[in-house]
Image (cartoon, rainbow, N blue to C red):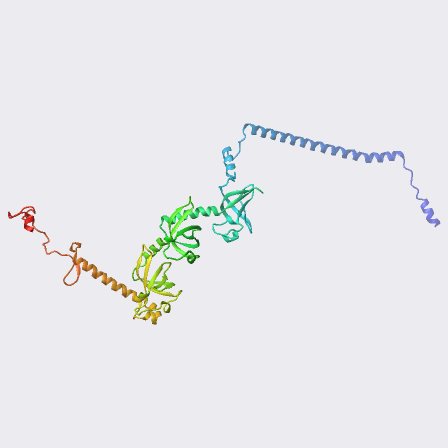
Length: 423
C-alpha cells in the first residue's frame, strides 16, 4: 500500500499558465466565427434567388393581365360563338312535354330512377312505364343500365324531381301504327276485354277500340266473346277524338274471299242447333246444315257431332256481304252414310273427294258457258257440230264481199216503201 501511495504522489500535473488558456480559447473561437459567416452568405444567396423569382412571377402576371385586357381570345382554340353553342347544348329544358334521353340506374316497387343529366333527379312511375297494364317496371323490360327516350309529364313539388313517361310516347306510336294499318287495309287481331249493349271493346296495338255488334259477323253476345281474339279491320282512326272503331264483319268478308267453293278447311264445332252445327273455321263461323252432314238422314245432330270436335268440311257457298258460309261433309263422303258410320274415313279422303267435286263443277260450268255461246255468235266462239268449242269461222271469202252492187236501204223496187215490203 505504501508503495502504491508513493506512486500516486509522483503523478503531479504542472499548473496551466494563463497564456496557454488564452491560446486554447483563441484556437476554438476562430472556426466558429468562420461557420457563422458561411451560413450568412448562403441565406443572402437564397433571399436573392427568391426575390428574382418573385420579380419573374410579377412580370408574368402583368403580361397575362395585359394580354387578357387587350386580346382575351388569343391562343383559345374555339370562338365565343362556339362557347355559347356548347352552353346551349348542355342547357337542360325541363318543360312539360320535352323529350329527354335518360339511363335507368335503379328500380323499386313503384317505378324507376332515371339519370337525365339534369340538376334534379327524375322518376318513372310504374303506371307510366308501359302502354300495357303492369305491376312492376321489369315486366316492360326496364332494368338498370337501360337507356331510352322519355317525355317529361310533371314535377314532384316535394323534392323538385321530374316525372317521366314512356307510356305517352308509346301511345303516339300506337296511333301512328293504326293509321298505317288502316291505309294498308290490313286485317289485325284484337282481344276482347269488355263490352256493353252496343258492342265489345277490343285491344289493338295497345289501344282500346270499339266493335259495334252490327260489325260482328256472328250473333254472339259480349259475354261469349270475352277474352277471345277477333280478326278486325279499321273503320275510324281519330287520335284527336280518341276514337278507334273496328269491324269484324269486314275482316271476315276479306277472309271469306280466300275461301273458294269446293275448298276443304279444318274447323271446330262451336255449338249445335236443331237445324245444324256452327263451325269455327279460322275465326269465321260457318253453318253445317243438318241436310249437309250425310247422305243418310240425321235425326239427332248430337249423335254425330259434339261441341269442341275437330273436323274437315267443304265450302259450298259464302255470302261476303252478310258474312255467311255454308259448309258440307256430305259432299266428302266416299260412300253415302260414311259420316255417320266412319267419319275418320271421310276426313282422310276429304281432299280427294273435294277434288272430284271441283272437277264436276268445272265441267258443269264449261257446259253452261257453251250453251250460252250457242246463242251469242258475236262472242267470236261457236260450238261445232261435233260439240267442240272454237272460233266462229264465216263461210265468206277472206277478201270479203263486193258491196258496190248493193242498193241503198232507203230505195225500193217501186212496189212500195221498205216498211210496206216488210209487211
